[in-house]
Structure formats: C-alpha cells, structure tokens
Image 1 (cartoon, rainbow, N blue to C red):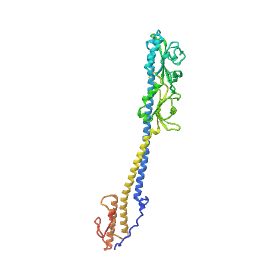
Image 2: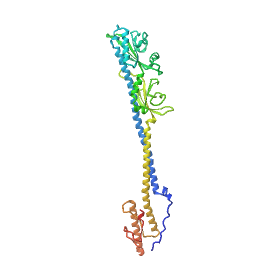
Image 3: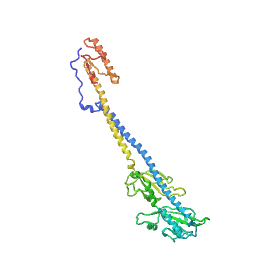
Image 4: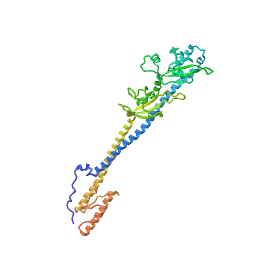
Length: 414
C-alpha cells in the first residue's frame, strides 16, 4: 500500500478568524481572561473607593467634631477666666471698703480695663443698684436695680448669654459696621463680715471669640477649606471663619437629639455641595455653665472625597493595564497550544487520507498536550504494525525514534 503522492491539506481559515472568539481559541482565551481581569479591576476600584470613603468619613468626621469641641471649650474657658477677673476685682480693698470714694474705684476699674482689653466696660453698683463708678464714666449715676446682672449677682457670680447693647456698641464701635455683641459678667462685693456692698459688672466684647478662632485654624485647615461657624441657641450665625468660600454660611445643623452635645453628620445644603460637619454644643467650664452656643466645623464633600476619586482612577487605570497584559499573554499562550493542536490535526488528516508515514508531533516534556500526542502516536504505531502484518510493503517505523527519510515529521509546528 503506497501513500499518496500529495495528501490534500485542510482548507486554511481566513486571517480574521484568529480574532473571532467563536473560531479562535487564542481570541477566546484573551477575551475571557482579559475581560475577567477588567471586570475585576472595576470591582476592585469600586470596592477600594467604598472602603476608603467609609474610613475617610469616620476619620475626618471625628477630626471635625474634635475641632468644633476644642473651639467651644476655648470659648468657655476664655469667658470663665474673664469671670474670674471680675470676681478677683470684687475682692479688692477699694470695693470692700464702703468708705472709699467713687474716684478711687473708677481708677481701679480703668486699670483692670487697660490690663484686659477684651472688656468694653466695667462698673460698680452700690447696694441699691446705682452705678457709682464706671470706666470712662459711662453709665455712671444710672440705675441698674432692675438689670438682670444686678439682681442675679447679689449672691453668686453671674454670666449672661450673648446679647447686644446698642448704646455701648455705638460708643466703642469707631465706625465699624459689624454688630457688636457682649457677654455680661458680674460678681457680688461683700465686706469682711459678709455684708452685701454692691455688684461689679463687666461687658465682655464678643470679638474675643474671633481672636480665639484665628488661633484655632491652622494653615492646613485653611488650605483644606475647613470652616468654623458659631450659632446662637436660636440658630443665628454669630461668627464664621470665612474659609469655605461661601458668602453666607449654611443654617445651623439640624440636631434632633437634644441630649447629644457633640458628633458628626452629613448636611445637604440647597444649591450647594453636601458638607461633612462636626458639631459641639457649649458645655461650660467648671462652675460656668456655658454660653449656650453650637459650633459647627464643616468641610465640603467634594474636598473630603477627592482622594477617593484619585484612588479609584489609579486602581482602575493600573487594573486595565494589567488586564490588557493578561489578555496579550493569554493570547500568545493559547496561540502556542493552538499551533500544536493544528499540527496534530494536520497529521491526523494526512493519516486519515492514507499517508501512514506521517508522524504525530510531540515534545519531550511531560505536559498534558505532549502526553496526548504520545498516546496518539502509540495508537497510530499500533495501527501501522497491524497494517504491516497485513501488507508487508508498508514500512513500520519504531515509536519514539528519529523519523526516516520517508516519514513526514510535523514536530516543527509544535
């Protein structure tokens, strides 16, 4: 039995078939592995962004809450210290001695005012409530008997809420258009026997809070547009740092739980970005019960989560690069296997057409494809031996030997 002179070869596929996943194993491998890697990159970027977003919200929310609390505590401590100054003045000899003239008491009050520029006015009222001595003579000889500070400070030190005094504001405003607010501090004056001699009162300027605010906001906070806003109990804006770029700060945070005096929350402001807000209510210091204000430290959501967007973009970008590299690598790896399978297919096709001298390609290693080729080669070898017994004219080459000159070896395609 003679092999045919020229065994017909399988028809060659069109070149674009190598790009069709339905026709090409390499294209299918590249599509599955590369597509899977791309999906993984998208999921990883979203998951990493969500994880970092949650951590940033907790971390920055805690930082803003701490900033608001520290500013509120600083205000309370400052008012407490000024209250202690008024109480200290109430213990000075010129006030505890009823025989001292009003001029001497005025001189002491002027000295205290010079030493504490945060005060706008200091005065002394006698037991009947008549102001007998005051700095710069302001409100001297006026009746304070019905004033809240006089009636409340007859027995214990007194601190008022923040309020306006138009007459005093006009006297010290010096042309400023900003409304001036004051905190009234008062303390009783008692003689050595504990008898009531009068009340010393002082009007503390709210501008001290702006100085405290300037010392609280660092350059980093200003660069990151962190704002601090102080609200009265009725929601009125008392003081704003002006570092967020807005013309008017948002309304006071809507706090539903009156027992919660500090925390953080998200605020959605109409027509503007959402804000991550840390808040703290004034809690006072020692025996001082506080000003009753609420401090809100805010940062725009776009600024808070800018690192999240950068992280997602970075993870997605490198993930897509990695997916493309996997797709290309899987293409070449699958193409190598495809070439070996095609070589086996060509050899099997020739053998089926009667070219029994064709050898099945196989490599020398122990990979799955190589083992398959050897097993097929053994099967074809058995077939040749049986065929040689029936027809002695058919050569039967030894298995795993170097191919003879009459044998067609396709191992070069592996």
